[in-house]
Figure 1 (cartoon, chains in turn purple, orange):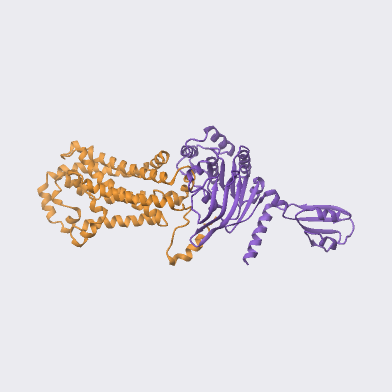
Figure 2: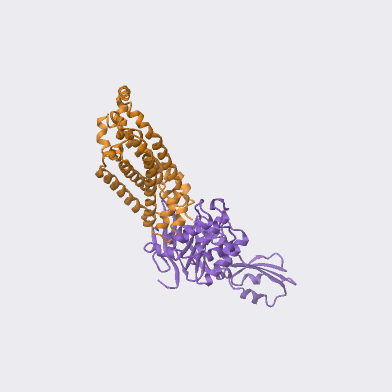
Amino acid sequence: MSQDLAIEVEGLKKSYGSVQALRGASFEVRRGEIFGFLGPNGAGKTTTIRCLLDLIRPNGGTLRVLGMDPQRQSVEVRRRVGYLPGELQLDGSLTGEATLRFFNDLRGRQADPAHIRRLAERLDVDLRMPVRNLSHGNKQKIGLIQALMHKPELLMLDEPTTGLDPLIQRELLAILEEARQDGATIFFSSHIISVVERIADQVAIIRAGEVVEVANTQDLLSRALRRAQVRFREPVNLQEFANIQGVKVLNGADPRSLLLQVEGDMEPLIRALADKPVIEIETERPSLEEIFITYYAAGDKEVE
Amino acid sequence: MRVVYLHALRKARGQILGWGLALFLLGLLLMPFYDSISSQSEQLQQLLEIYPEEFIAFFGDFSEFATPEGFLNIEFFSYMPLLLGIFAVLAGSGLLAADEESGHLDLLMGQPISRTKMFLARMFAFLSTAAAICIIGWLGLVLPLPASGMDLTPAQLALPFVSVLAIVFLFGALTALLSLLVPSRRLAATLGGVVLVASFFIEGFSGMITELEDVARYLPIHYYQGGDALNGLKLEWVLALAAAGLVLSVLALLRFQHKDLRVGGEGGWSLPLLGRRRKATEAGTGD
């Protein structure tokens, strides 16, 4: 067990009756990183987070959170973690302020009231309103403040951007980045790929209860397929390009224009184009979404 | 634990006021009737002779109606287990399952509090709520006492409430356990309610159907003293009820310590015939 790891998950299994929600998921989150847990609804993200907090008990596998066993040291784990549930439910009879005071009291008043007020201002939420009168997005902000207010070592956020408008989403990502700079580890799940792409250092993709990829976000983007459109001043022999390793010609009808799919490094293609009358090259950087879809498409083929 | 206890007690304010005031007003309205009834005991005796035997057997010895103990037993304490039993069944089934079904427990248990402390805080809050309701009800009897002809002390009037509290604890613990075993709070309350009502009527009819006496002996209401407690509390009965409540509470605690907390009604069990429908709903529980 490494001291550098905030979360260690090995062969995690969880079933609900005959339904296997997790089928041996494994991944690690290093301390101080922002880790995005990516998957569609029903893939096993919430189940994983709830196992890590001992809200549900796994059927197999091992778990460590901040070096501790979440089942044996559940209270200590939760003392050092800030948690936002995926299906946030608050006591509607309390105001936002009373709600946060209650959670702060539960934590032995770990949080500084001035810090709570600052977070409320940044997320633009009125804490004097009863929770039942708040919109879904404003309730989510209260939930986020209760997770962040005691400056935890580890944040576990299940779909943190749900219900937030784009401006507040941006502010939240800034707050999370600041928390990371202060030494916190941030583990968050999302099915919104653009959010993961914007902030996560590492990303894990979970499919049907199994983690199918864990990688540095930038590495994942750079090693993925990208498209290149090349236009020539005069016709060229397009067959030459079909023989380059990692390159596939997608459109060869027009000898002055070439549409290619490139896997990995662009260098072999650039070398091949060096002695050609190239007018213009356009490359499309793939989004994490396309990569994500690739994994799911591959999974579907396996099933077939 | 104190924070959860106070929070739960604060949320029970409505229950304390609602149930407490109802008992308070009942006592307040009832007490003045005693003097007029006791002054007409002969006419009352004649009236009672025309009542069916079953009616008298169910509600107790009507010949005692003109005594303070008999009057309070028949008019107030005889149906208190059923009345406050309903409160116990509703509050016990919602002890943890209400927040679990709403999804609020997920966030609460994400805080640094152990399951044992959460359970104990909620159970103590439930008992405090029941005690507060009984105290308000007791005040309803005590306040008009000086103006009535009853030769009873406030301390005497408190004794039947001790017996009531023991019954409330038992049924609260029973339904708390059931709510952690069956798939829904509503089902737990229904099952607890069936046990409560059946116990009440079996005990009531056991006075005239001798076969029911053996059954009644194993039911909690049999050990409820009612108005008889005004003449002295059977401590062994109270302790037996409290011990049964304690055993059920320990079982509920053990179950809570080991169970998966549900969100939005996931998990649970269903009858095999409903298996197909359950599979369809489970598809959305894996995230």
